[in-house]
Picture (spheres, rainbow, N blue to C red):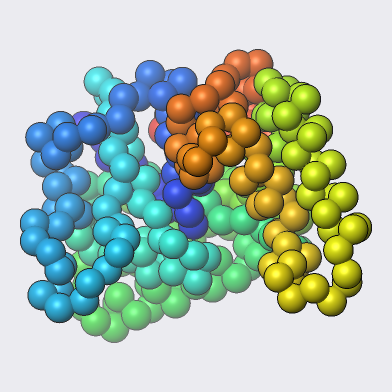
Length: 267
């Protein structure tokens, strides 16, 4: 059965993609006994994993399966750990057991072309390091265009949230989905963040994260998540509420992500 590896930055990225996969007929594996044999190598058999370090987050993949294929989504924890996490997945499974690989990363405030070039360079550096170390299965193909699967063994693609072109992040997609399915909640959350930003002093230290990078978008999404399911993380809110239900899938940003998933899975 074909295997597909996806690496993402955070838990809400994994949850978002997991909901899209479920809409395509995939089911999440909720027990270790349901994890296909090829993927079990990525699940720790003891703790601590290295015999010493007390990691709070165990970075094993979320598994989604249907009759014809299996997808594993691994969370890196940050954008600067995406490619090292990707290498860990490839080294553990071997390229011969992977039909396709996809990396999802936010453009953030960067230029999309610059962001993509950076990921290309990181994949190339990963290939070079693996070749020097004599690791079998390398080099993997380096994608030439964002949002397009590159033919190879395995095929490889990089998707830049929100749409491979503009600055932004997954949060832009999530807000758009909320505006479709929960317009009053989305409008109130957006207004809350804007009004707090305006009302508080420019130099207020506690708001430095809100006012930098994608802070306002993240705060808006976090507010929506808690209004839909109080006390829940964004990832849990996405999975347990109607946030991403149809007709949100008709949004152009969601359709773009779904098209890339289709290219990953269907070739």
